[in-house]
Image (cartoon, rainbow, N blue to C red; front, side):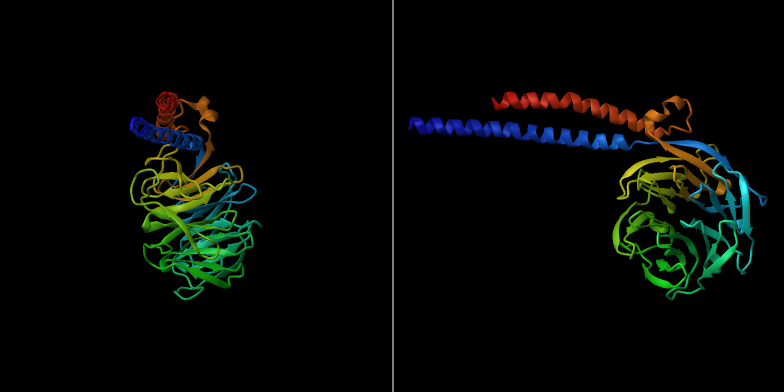
Length: 378
């Protein structure tokens, strides 16, 4: 009997120890998880530095009337869809005017609201001629090559095409906005496939606008009135989505342009929030910049966005009738510009303070919890 009583006391003490250790183990796991999450978040903190701008309201060379789309070729030249002037303008990477083409009309090389503009690997320029319900293709100097599309809802027909993107094989994916779908065409304009319908479910759209591709051929679509970005395989199979209506990080007030950098990060023109947001290719929020205004780094309804091979970002600042150019830097790379508010957004400063405080808390907490566990175990 004394032996059994002793065994029961030992078991009870072990049970008490187990109950004491269990919450502390949970606390340690939570602290370690928090520190890992913060390390990832801190590594993704970015600064977005204003470089230059060009453009003003008007019809002369280098002036704009609501520029929508922007694209960059592999030589660094910048093409702008000068939408209400019904033309395309070409610039050097620092905004020097080079040439333009177009004009209002229905003939080859004319436009009825030039919306999206993209450039393929060979330097050919594609334009979403929205109200003519067609896509037009040009040389880099503006010579007309070909066109496809007529108004309608059948396969290969278009209704207010907003944007397009071209894959490495020359196939063209079109945001057939008025038909709430994506259509894929061969470079000759022959219809290949389509996906999407009106709605808010996965794979449905409410006026798809900006569209782009990653290096694996996945398709990213700015689903405008659904306030989100959707990601698909190259043949239209739904993969994921992100975004809800709002003003918080990762939320949108309608989505317009979308572009990817060389690392696969996704940049989205958050239209009515007057900002650009950056995400991983799975939709994890990285950073943001911009507020409503006319100053450097401020926007008024930004639409198009393009990224060159060096990582420079060009934004069609539509209602300010200009193009703005930015570069992305790590926080340490920009300490020399600490007094330049256009190069260090408030979000980055606040995030850095938050991450630093939490990181210090983790460093202090982990040894205390570990020591307590060891003493309890004894």
